[in-house]
Image 1 (spheres, rainbow, N blue to C red):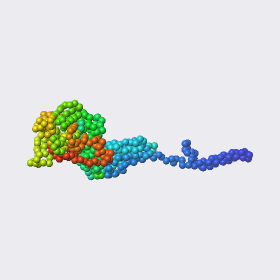
Image 2 (cartoon, rainbow, N blue to C red):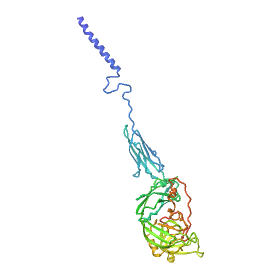
Image 3 (cartoon, rainbow, N blue to C red):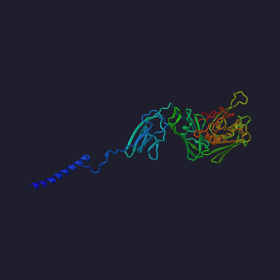
Length: 435
């Protein structure tokens, strides 16, 4: 019996040792068997998450005096921008993304004294992100507006030489910014340039006459444009010029004739009498004139003289079309019919037969060409609308965009048949007939 018991105890003891060993191994492993897929290395279960994209907006949230000519910039790191919205009063601001859509920059100017809301969304490996911001633009101390655009008469047909004259209500100091907001487009291709005549007036003309029978559109996107340190544009402007037929009149002082062509075809030949040229004031100016305005009748008084002085006159003339600020007109002159076609006897104007003067008066358009040859007195480029007297290469130097130096402005000499002194600033649509 003793031998049997011995044989039974040996396997039990061995089993106990094996179980104890297994328990010892299990306790060293960290508390139980590992789950499928779990890591048994150091730091298991502590891998950091990928962060969401970070969106930044400039101007900063809550900014209250933002310059309207500065862009809104939205950028994203750790992802790409999906959508950006900038608006004020329901009106969106245009902008553009860069190639990888990590940056958006506004291309449209902001409105002064306005509240803007910015909303931006981005997506990335770390998930989506959304930002909403708001800011306000400054209220300018002075508002820049356009006081006059010439021409700007609804339904008016204009000549092929017509310039575009823009007059502001404030002195413009930042001419480069303001000029950059002015655009002129035409249905038929052209090259043109602005020239600043003063701090308040800028004039546009093409390098060659406008092509006939087309529309020319002017836009002034002045809203948010800086005109001076404390002055910004507050609204935009637009106007359209309707260019009609090419009316070109050629006046020969020596042969005493005026030939009128429409689209290259002669439609009228007129015997005329020009300035008698006994003095400079009585000499018709030579060069390219533009028709400016008309009157019927117009009172013409000798300049610089009062009643009773030698050479004083006061004449009432009919069917008068102005071609300079110094007093030159094409007008009816029944008193000089005998000299028309043969001699120059006027005080500087182009005298014509009453019936032909009326025909010209009835058919003229502002901006038609009147080219006068045969005298020794040149029309000044700033006498009336004599802008075609200046070569285009020189004209465009008056633009603020190339940053070229200003040139001196000559003063035109009055002709005797004007009642008003010469003025270098072009008349506006509201100017009265001065005679």
